[in-house]
Length: 133
Image (spheres, rainbow, N blue to C red):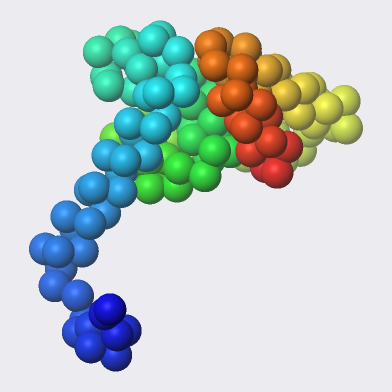
């Protein structure tokens, strides 16, 4: 058994980068197993992604706990991230009705994501994950 005290005090930056890349790949494979074919095309940059899809996919990645993948995804689309930031600034002055519309939008995204999953067992677990978000 490895003792934590036997590990080096600092991890080599190359090793750390490789570890992070593997984490991103793992999260991507799991997300691909869950998401629609259309979203997979958008994520792999085989299709044109717009601000609405960017916001929705970023939200889903975050809601599912795929932080490494989400961070990588948004950094690959800094132009859309900037536009989303501008949109969020405008939303900060939203009325209660507009806030409710935004909440309804994320609930719809959750439902559409869950509905396209074919395995009932997987659907039920993803519902539980979204309920914790």
